[in-house]
Figure 1 (cartoon, one colour):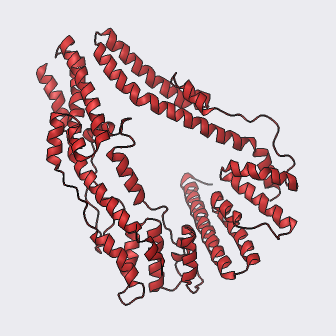
Figure 2: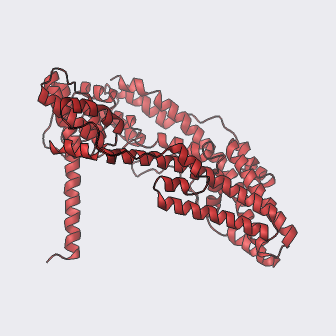
Length: 277
Length: 224
């Protein structure tokens, strides 16, 4: 029966998980930052860790809610679509200054991205980049600001965005994921608290602790061979391992979120300069 | 004779045409905005904004159409144009679900004679969100109060399952397991069910208010 218990626990560890890639780079070398480069994993360990991080205590304060808020900043307000139009007109930057200042982003994007409406020019590329910036489609904004040549009157403004996008400094956060994992192995949840996610650490401690109490109670009263003890032991093993794994992961998630929050602040500080064209 | 692949291709064609049309309506609306700005004239600008709102309604964006119409000033306009403007605003507000704005314009519409009466006959059904929250002490009852029968049944079954598991654990001689396990599950599920029941009551009130004013909306649309 003991062997069966160990086999049951080991079978849970055999589920493979994969870590996601960093931000993809296409063949032209453009860095697509449509989502922050946070590791994505699958499998029961990830599922169990998400339960620990989404409990009532940590739902609005844990790292996954922080991650969701940062993802919202980097998610475009709407998808830009282009359409065909036969008649060409002169591009009037003053109208787009008014439109973007009045938050008419949909109208501005419809006009700027209509094929054939305006002649290609630096002004058009700059305005396209600007409307992409305003709707938080930063990767598309990067593509358009890159196109502006250095002798263009818009080059200085475009360069301010490109400098922030390509070279923003890293946040001052130096935690070791292995230490977080070892701490969680000793005291469940302590690794997450060490990483900086107090709400999730507390939630993990309570849930894993309660499961441990249930397992001990069942072992004490029913013995190790009882199906209840085996089931509770399996669930405890899953959540205990998920907590260790989640603590290891939380260090990189928090570091990435701090870097992205720093980049967000620098990007938003560009709003007034970029609009002064 | 039409066969299934033919029907499928016709549907794809129709969807493409309508999608393109929606895109054209969006672009037409944007062109109207640019023309209104370039005209420099309040009268021409207002009529272009009115056209923009019409295009936005065609594109299925009543909220954007409503905010465009709100930029048009009724002062200095003749009676017919004021009526058209008010009627269009009310239709856009109703379709966008902005019932507070719709009801605020209703008295003015009645005074102008656009609608026959300020409120339809009958009683407006309402649900109290606080009552839904208190009723959720019995899982599912709060949702049933708001008419969400599927959610009510599901939540009731989930909570019954948890309580059954707790009872089974007690009966098996594992009180600590019952208290800890049941406690965690109830703590995780009950507050979420209560919050959802409160939100459902709010959604019910919005839907009921919209249905209540449907006769007024039909009267307004008939004049279009």
